[in-house]
Length: 288
Image 1: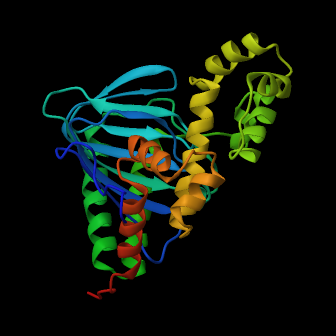
Image 2: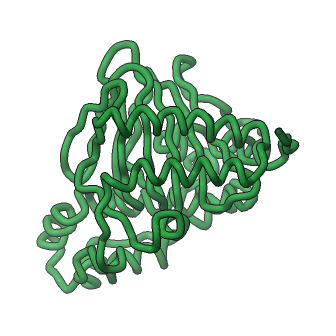
């Protein structure tokens, strides 16, 4: 698309998304990053990632973490996080994103929670790493749906011992006071929001609200609002909406603003993300 870059600013960074054509709720991602520093962002899915090379530094749930080779990162839906290289050589990694409803089905019906952001047990990391390679290859080559789904179940079985059942619906885990704030943000992604409006929704004074929100979500209200805007933009891009329309619907100034904000959080431009999803959805299926 004219005027929209297809890659990172740095030629040393690259990333790719892939979705299996038959299974909604699964997104695969792989990247090698040297120069890019990802801004705070979230995903509307569980995210599991294996570090193949180098070391990543990221902030998640209010703490800084270092993820070296052969560690597994576990993130819950809408966990805001950053990411950057800790070493001059950068880091490479692979991710599997699973929608919450899909993981509930695969894992036996209960919502999962991970108390630790990093899993280091080689008895888990090694097979999960191998399964991520096989899942990518299966999706890329258009393997039979049964073969892909069997790998997915095996992956979840390896992750299950490190999770605990949430016991209550995920929305009940957040402080009840901030539910109206999040609902207001989602309802008005395309409109400016003031501190006074958000504080009123929480029933707090403006500066008490700022302090309390950051303590609860480990992010400022503006960071959360941008993360929600980009999540909605990602959904609309995947659905095929024109990029200028996506920008307007999510409160971004224009298509260029969308491109910059999206790239800084997901590692690819909106145009490239759409192209990758279209390519993965049209690959011919191969039978063993």
